Image (cartoon, rainbow, N blue to C red; front, side, top):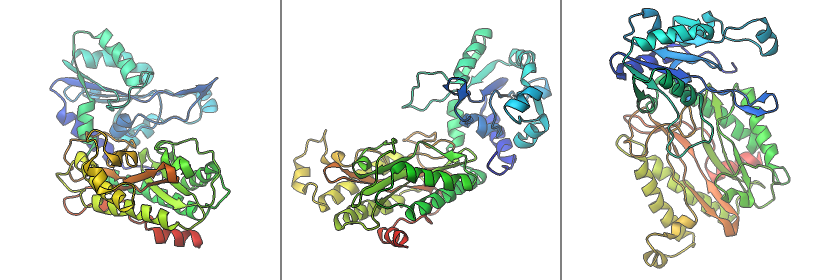
Length: 429
């Protein structure tokens, strides 16, 4: 792996905490991610299923994790099944985990070849009453293709129809929302690499370069620093593209006088950062651009203070609307009288600010965690207000990743340039 070895205690602890929340006489089965078909005989680069990685740290396809804390057979209470390699696989595909390597990585003593799984699975499920199956339950995401957990889990249900089946996702959501010290260190590493990518861009951007060239500079810096890549499709949006929230074509030329909105984050050991910055392509904000930028920055600074225990994402979003509405009045986009007369179902601010500002971050860029869940120490969430004035080609978003503690919030990206004057100074140098 590109990333440095992770202390297996992280995964041991994650499994122990999960086991304590499972029902008596139960078994939980987790599958690694599919190899995703690209075209012809090619796959996309493999990326592990987040829950699977969280529980065992194995970063390889065709792997299965079985947890059955009360199983009569102690060798099946915690079992990992992996591909049995051979000379042909080694020549054509490269190295696969040995049993010893899988034990060292995961902290699981009982590692078996995938070829031996069927008989062992029959035993462990036959001696259990309850079965936990897993699948991605992100509330706004319903892909057409079934994931491996869903597909193979259904086969288990067909084979063992008289068991009681339960969802593992709610338990994993409860666990994954609160980051351990080790996870926070991995997220901080991802943020540090993201910083390096941004600072490289500040020294590179100028009129005439293309958005994809800027993305290439970021990718280069990420690779140099052991990132596995981008944690999500990066947004490199110049000019009017900065007003498209999920613009990912990244193929236009950067023009003098325009702004460049960038939303990207390094993925390190499957943990991803999520940062947004907006810079002037020719190195200097116009007075109007700087006024808009500072309006968003003031909102960001006020919102960041709210990342304390007891706050909810919905509270952050509501306060962001209030702050940005006041800033828009100050920018002359509409008046207080206009606000007083507006249709409550169609508030004026939504024309210029139409997204939420706080989501969990971790193994997924939009990590698990409901918006209504009160903040607790150990949660890491984004803070990302913005303003989008299409008629002026002004799109600005500022975003950092914030750690909730039992004291003051900690900005994991506080070391990344954010002030308008600092950005201009960096670009001038």
